[in-house]
Amino acid sequence: MMEEVYRRYPNIQAVGTTMREVHSTNRHSWSAVLHTGGAGYQAPTCELDVYDRVGGGDGFASGLIYGLLNGKGPQEALNLGWAHGALLTSFPGDTTMATLDQVEALAGGGSARIQR
Image (cartoon, rainbow, N blue to C red; front, side):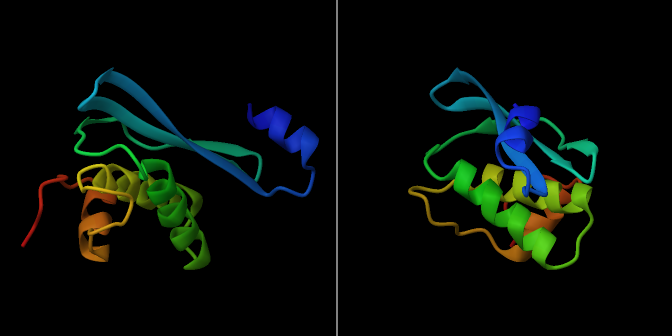
């Protein structure tokens, strides 16, 4: 898929996408990949208890873009997108309720459990 995107759109600098395996309505395996600068990156895979799957991809994109715009390296930016998308599936609707601290904690290898 990545090669096709680069072929069709030669000015693209990065291609990222989520990878979701749906086991049931409320149980998904969740990961993501990024290709940029001639290298590929993969986020961890986690098992999600999904409340609402709407917006998970948008959450991934916004977290990835946030990371890239804030000077994070490709792997860290990817992990921020992966974490934000995962957390977003635990809320109703497609508007995040995750804090930056929660996203960064999950992206850094922490738990998806709410930290208050």
